[in-house]
Image (cartoon, rainbow, N blue to C red):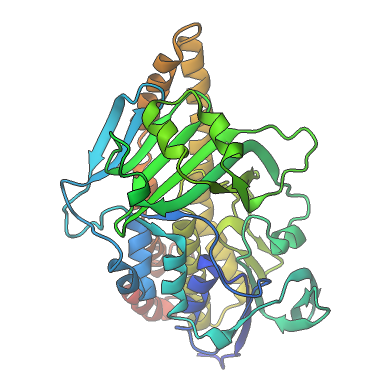
Length: 435
């Protein structure tokens, strides 16, 4: 083995993706890791977050699953996993119950801050430098230097990892031509005590999407006595000023979008006096998420999917895992960081391409159903589009096992398909076994 050089690594963003990246990278030898975040204190804004099969897999890999298990009741075959209803009539369109397979963690949902706290339990707080709002990056032969709003700098670093969310400064630097756009949709979210809606009849006791032609409402009684409500509504922004993210708004701003819904939903939406508003932004797929051999993007920073699949944390965890494994492999082989992040890019790109194809398929389904149901009742449209969307089955997204993809890639390398020197095959074999 050649002499190892200690890698200086910066993680920008201390959300779930950034924290997961730190936890994976700390397992590597000869690395010095720094985390920077612009917030004065770490807190999660939002309501609930879904924990699917792939999310649980990575929480176990990160060593924090037991911090969350206490908040969830999983694997109950009488418990509704998810159902879809017509929002106007309340008619049940589809329903699925939780699996009892001991090898497949059941889907569950918790408050976002509990996921954040579970990850923080594995990261010493002194490792996170707060109030460091990134404004620019500078590249020299020595590495990448971070420039902050308070006029301080940090670096140079051998590798900068942008985990700074959908409005990523790192992405703006690396890919200045990439642009986000407002989707003309807003989400309203809130958590309230279940007792506040206990008087309302016919509330499903599980995750439920209530659909109309242009909006939907999501309801879910969580395991710990809270009740989650999340909605989406079309709101145009002709002036281009919509930027809200977690802004508190009064009930009057919300309920008017859902007057056509059935009585159950109208009564539920009337309970909270205030909501959090999230303007939804998205952007086109980046065909590469690495820059100049020393900058890599993960999570929403790499692919701004505007929450389309409700699995943003899982995607970030998958990114963090592959990126750390690729850098670890480069250390074992004595190759460069540039080769490591290129490998990361090659492994993750096909998955994100598939996700964007799903979004395209959704748009095509909507057009197809609109054409077939032209002039028909809106309720028929809703039921047709939900059933046709379900027929497209996206469960593969939530079952996707990136650890298997990584092992398969290493096995290919071991077999010499990538032209690697056979002398490093035992090392790669050991890495594959450990992975």
